[in-house]
Length: 467
Image 1 (cartoon, rainbow, N blue to C red):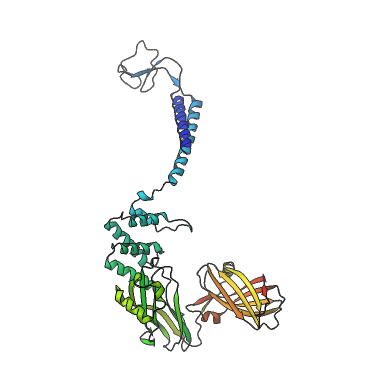
Image 2 (tube, helix red, strand yellow):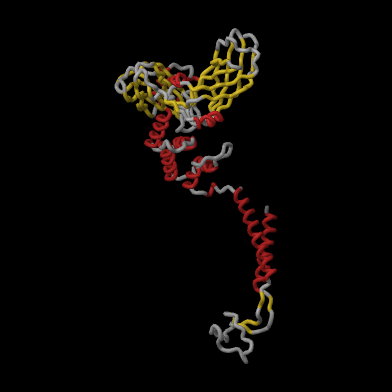
């Protein structure tokens, strides 16, 4: 690289010199000229005191020059071309060299924190985040800078319209380790993270007198860090519809507060006896937070809840009650509760978003049918009954539901009385038909696409070994 830059520099000097020579030109005579306006003074008996053209004093030193000149156009053109080519080549080489240079240690913190919010391609290191971590770990930030960084992270955490990166939670928890965060900031961080992790799910419309699934859960936490720094216990209180208590308690749970934790969801069936109209369903929960190092991970799963509660009570630094609320509408027994979206334009989009991973038929004491479906970026939720078709006959095999979330893999199996199913079949047509009945069984599924999708002539894997 250094040799190339040297050659480019030499070429620029040569080109620039040629351009100067070409611009100055070749002298064509020995006439005296006014240096200012180039007036030819030849023909005068003596050089006058003033230039007849511009009035310049010609008696002063360097007021005149000898000879008219004609520019060397070829030399000027070659010089300009060589200069421009070498200048552009040098700029490109310099830019390439500068791109590899690590500028991040020299950038101000405000610039790094703004760039840290950018989305980097998978597998690439977020260099602004790396530099902020380094400065924080090496104590290169002032208290004022650290406080500004914490407040920025808290503002992002509180704004659900902004994408959350676990980096911000890790920064806050690192400042906690260094005793650089105020008590108020730590409380705001933990409460916001817990509030985003607590979920209560029920279908938006339920029929009066219907037994429906109501699910409550905690995590995975999308607004915390990845450090396992905080341990949280949850004492679920009463579940209510408006002021009417439906259930006294959902029990106790405990886990660390981190972004990598799995989702803990538990559902129960309840009969809805509320009056017709709009209501609010609420679940109260008591939270207690303690440092995670107060709980031995290996011993935790062998402890009784009473023992865990004693440890947390002894080490807790935060204890509060929060309530999660969701709206629910009670309709008459015969009213629909699932909205059907009859939009043929979505058919091909949904079809392309579905991939059939495998179709398997296993023969034991009875036939077992399995299908693996992968859903990727659905435009809206779906609920299907799945049929296998061979020739003119169809067999109901299973049911599937999927929300808009991308990358979810659904594996379902179904024991079915396949009377008349051809055991020697090698291919089947897979038919997906929208089903309100199936959608009603999925918690918090309120609308589905209406239609039918067919995947013809799909290869069938058969396993005929006896079980």
